[in-house]
Image (cartoon, rainbow, N blue to C red; front, side, top):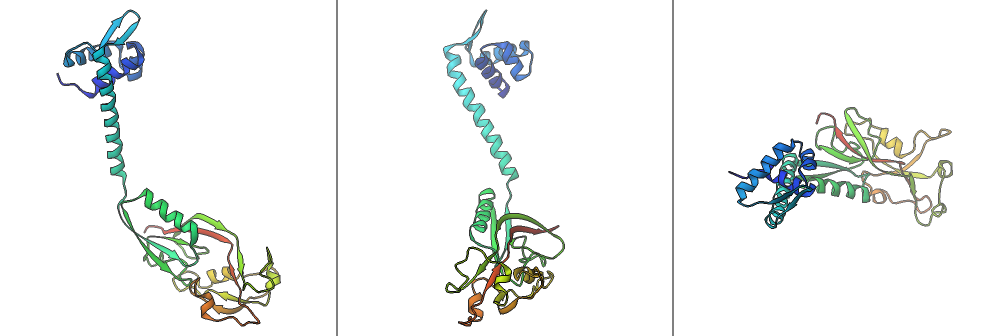
Length: 264
């Protein structure tokens, strides 16, 4: 007779429960069926594995040796099943990720690292988009998913928050206001701002720019645009600040988000 997995499971249950009654409940068979299956196993092995007494059962020397191997075989089978299921569910292929110039730093690194750890079989291509492309390639399907900073005023996008940060003002280190822990918009009225360009990727043209410039403002008033930049790193380079009127930029208080195009 061939030894089957059920024989191993039944034997391990009886050995660990030290009796047929509790073991039968554990493996969901009747006591008579369980006893017959263990007898079949002993016949196949060729020696008694259990010593049956009025108080229960005890392992024989052969049974103790066989128990260790039976446990190892069942554990190995469980690992094999788990590995097969994991492989069947594994995602593979290529993912094009759009990176907005308005995002970066540790949150972006954490998201990309977490995805790589969860889906090692997926090849990731990174495409960087400047500030004139708030949707980072999603609207023309140049990317599959994107890390961006809202607002992204366009239909058909699903967004999920991955990080938040406060609005900050960026000033020259020698500016009189640079040492302040907080500033109100009224205190910077009249100072020139470094602005983003109008959007050209299909988003509402002024939505991202207005949010960057904090428009509309409480009490009205319009910002003074002293320079325009398409990327974060070139803001100072596009137009050198006047020594008497240092350019100033505001990073919007917003949430960095992962986004995807619905149906893409």
